[in-house]
Length: 76
Image (tube, rainbow, N blue to C red):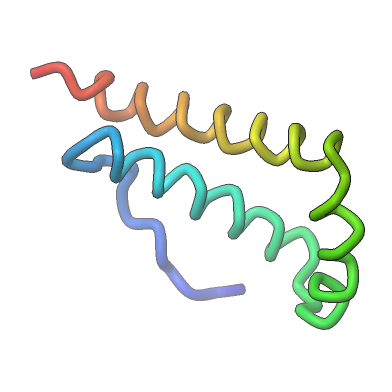
């Protein structure tokens, strides 16, 4: 993937920051497994696995921490 899509971590609101964290997490999966056919094939397995869903939530939370820090926790 050579497209430049992430130009800043700065967002106007925490909600936008959380959505960016989700995007970062999803893009990370796409970079790790670029074959969309394989991704779609594996989705039913992890979609019903509580440990996999918890791990996905942890990745999103970590990315949200990064975005929040970059935004000085939206303090002005």
